[in-house]
Length: 228
Image (tube, rainbow, N blue to C red; front, side, top):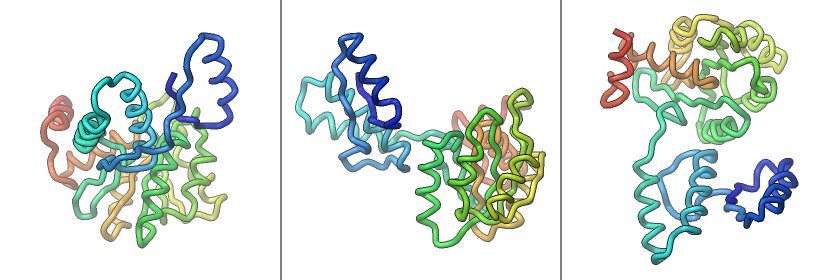
């Protein structure tokens, strides 16, 4: 059983299950140990898990495994995950829909010289108050919006009140297209769109539809064409 060692609160449970099932427990390093182009704390932690599992199965030279892994990680991409798209303004999309993913986004935002505006929306069954606290001081202003998921949506106004209670400069636009349009008008060179998959995906499609970002290619072009 390969485990990241986090979150620490479930450590006892993981170890109990491993003992009960007679499994060898291997704790992966918190991040990859070799040079890759994998961006973000969250993705590097996942990459570390993959590499730790591969090392257990690999019978060849360690150098060959690490070289192959580095090449594969350098080619790997996940649309919407710390995904910077060049435009006017450019847009950083990130499906930071839980605290672990939000850590990666916050780390990326710390690297920026200024606080960009952000369009943010969460589902109501996620720890959105905790994630709002994590974003405090990282984005300004914040435009809250409502995910395209009626059964689990968190209304833009409700999320807006959470951010406002934290002292954030906040406005609300329930419609995702309206929220993105407002966010673009507030941005100088970068807009951040983050939170639920249902927010990030809809926002990305809207940017393509309206020519705010270069048209997609490959599999992404098929996603846009399927709407017609």
